[in-house]
Length: 304
Image (cartoon, rainbow, N blue to C red):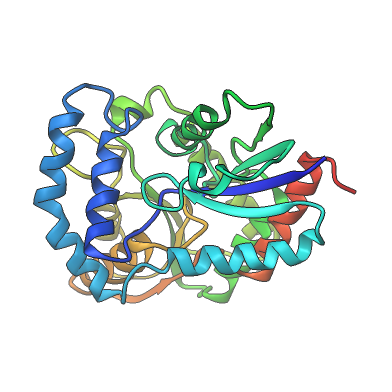
């Protein structure tokens, strides 16, 4: 049987044109905005936000999501040893699922979202697109809904946190927020909290003791109620302090980690007497993350 795994993510902007495509497609997604008003909101948000967001991209030297993901794919292809093929697809920018599999024939395809926690706005949205493409084919689709509880995956997080550890520091796990109207019907918030419990225990077992461990949510947009506490709110509550930040809802660094956590919130921290601000990296194209994906893929596709 010919098998493949496709790594799924949201996408990123490599140009102004692609940024507008990203914003337009994201706010047209029924998993993001269920109401038909999305057809009005999407072009409006794209028009209002694209200039400012592009300025933010310029501050971080552009999106690195494609570079990290392609490097990750290259490493996994070596580890697969020809037993399966590896691709990546983006939800809101190219390449799309259809771009990759239009002229390729596989018996079995594993959909592997690069989101550790399940959410209808990320994981399920990507599955929607893939299932629509493959529905009239004989391809057997397999999925990974979440992997935040995998011990090998979590070791990559523990190792990165330990590289930034300071005994007198607070640890903040930063997660992408969701509107409460979506979160109350979604597994995401519960998965985040479970994940922090798992990681907190693992850190304690390895003798890593922070002053305290906090959950903060980032990336709120618009006037509606989102999951709390917000990142700035957590900063205010613990300042003055040393902090270590881990982007718990991401495996690939992007504008939300590189700009929002790396620049925007760091600037806020500097005004609040945060004496030390250490930002951990996501897994990106690390060897250990590539090994995890390969191991998980072979397990699910029953490859020896």
